[in-house]
Image (cartoon, rainbow, N blue to C red; front, side):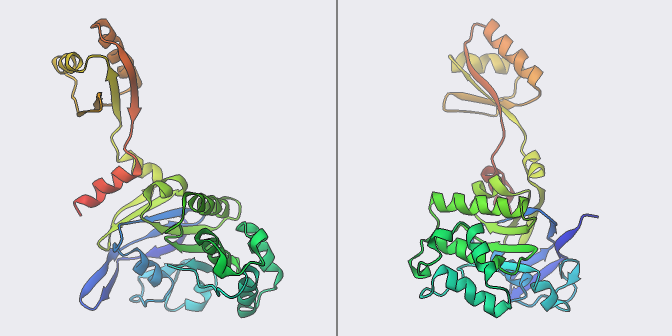
Length: 302
């Protein structure tokens, strides 16, 4: 059995009569970056608030570090850090002063503040008022605040929301560094699928409160049937030749023909046949659906 840092067992949660989390069974392994994906309103933030015990879960449904959260609340929360929605920072204090303030509240030595500023790349802006920070700098300060107590687990809710491309890259690189160099387990929610594809080791896809997929990023990609994309000089003659020779055409778009991928040997054979038939092959290569298209396939009927 894998070492699970987060486990939910058939978790249900209601706001009044509305079911917002529906039979959710998350499994987040130690050392993973778990991309928690779903459209806005899917139940991601509610789920994270339940994991933080900000919303109370039914007994024996939520387990952090192998222990039921309601009966081990303080011990569990001491081992995690979080950034949910906007970071809680004082705009009139500098970045460093915000961290000093949190050190006092947590009873942590103030030297930890400088260490965190260095880790999130805010050393040069340490003395600047946090209210003057860019959105990306505020997010990094929020992550620094979450990391002060050296938690084993980080829960980040849409950490790249509203950031420009540079800010997104900064947060992405920071998450990878935290997981690989500092052995943190990270659950990160997002609707930016291309971002999650770059960093996640595992993925959970949620829609309307239901978990539709859970597994490694490779297992998700394995759901996508590989295809061949073929570009030739004469589309009409090429299409006619392929159909007469029993090839299944999946689609024709932008002067490219899509066929099912069988093997690299079959690609070579097809290339030879086309040339022998007098066609010029401009390109032939294997393609897979990216995470965005897989996500749409998984969520559109649910």
